[in-house]
Image (cartoon, rainbow, N blue to C red; front, side, top):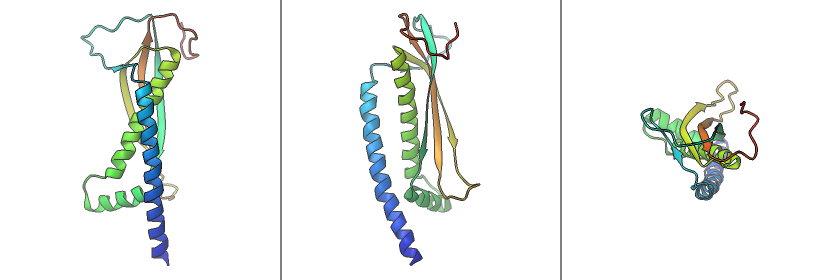
Length: 159
């Protein structure tokens, strides 16, 4: 009976997780097309910065949780070694979503470009709680610039 429960949860995790992941990727692709007009650039110290009258730091953050199927396959891959495709897609979704959230905030402010984007990740494994879940936090941050007078200065800017 316990084996059937385990297999049932594994199948539920696979199908429900796959459907949720596909919907999230479709949403990401649509929003990436909508924000494509605002480029994300990395400027080296030897390069001139683009001209701008205003600059503001923008942050995009997301926490993505894995499903039961990814947890089990990740544990099995940890025993035998090798790449874990389920975790790779989890990280890809996290990175793309964090960048999108950062860009959307910059666009809402009126930014024409986002410079020097950096990313941070943190594993939020719940080993202390023994719940068997795992998640990852991804943070993207960069400097949004624009040349026109802002319609509204975000509260984090001090002039």
